[in-house]
Length: 226
Image (cartoon, rainbow, N blue to C red):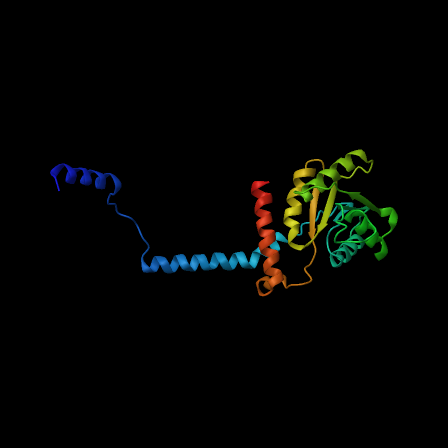
């Protein structure tokens, strides 16, 4: 090999690589790091369900807003909440019902859930159905915006509400309703109690795992990318 070729290869090697010192963990450092990661994972597992299924009601709220798409078992809990609080109005929201999957005699979940609450014993004069428009995405936010417009056109003079929704969907609903309604009025939140898994040991149930993963990802979108 000629002297010029050896010099050229040496020049390329010197441009592409260099030596440097790096810091790395000692065995004791790795033990501490693993212990911290284990603690963080355990803390996440123990607290993610109550974080997503947040309940923080406003004690003075005189209006309960119920998301009409929630399961029938949740509507029973919403009815119980309507009897506990000093609510003057029960507003039910919800978008159109897909007729391919539901034959209910109602066009939207707001009217359907309102009828179910009335059948449970809620006085009809207290129930107000506020149907939401048909949208492809951000249905919760659109429901909240639609509710705000309806309240602006009404004479109810509502200052604060408690929003009742399904389990781990609560954190996301609370974010969306706050975005849409604050500072027009204050929003409290009440999450239903799960019926198909143990919230203290959600990781032992496939339903619990799917619920946490799905709502956890949806929360990240709502909080950081909406």
